[in-house]
Length: 163
Ligand code: FES
Image (tube, rainbow, N blue to C red):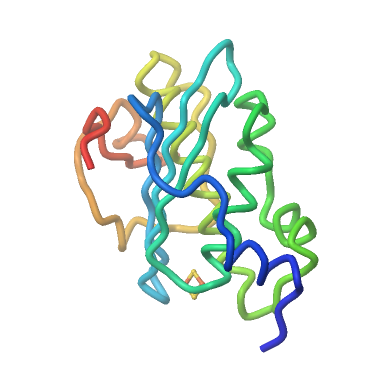
């Protein structure tokens, strides 16, 4: 499988690895097909993502995608951040092999889930956006949140930041 130089560079030197302190939003999702897991934590101020970090248990493409998504999202408004598409990420990485496009859904969906979690916790469940993929069969944490029971299904853990 051929990866672009940018994918390889982000895989070898991933940015924003870890967890932000006192996260305002947490998104953790898994890919039902490959079993990979991604967790994103965000800090938010004045409707912008001021910091974002990731932990990914997954393939090299998923790690490169996570790294790129965090770079793209930092400083964005929440609305712009949830508008990042998997194609945006793939383009920013200089392309991804077709078989690896689902890995970029994991990245954009983990970010969306973190923003959804923030919106839920701050009393704005009406802003919750749908995820690209259905990760419901592979959620690794469960727990009630303000939007876990609605049809948009962010289904995020409400653990207040506990790892
Ligand atoms: S193969 Fe699972 S995210 Fe890439």
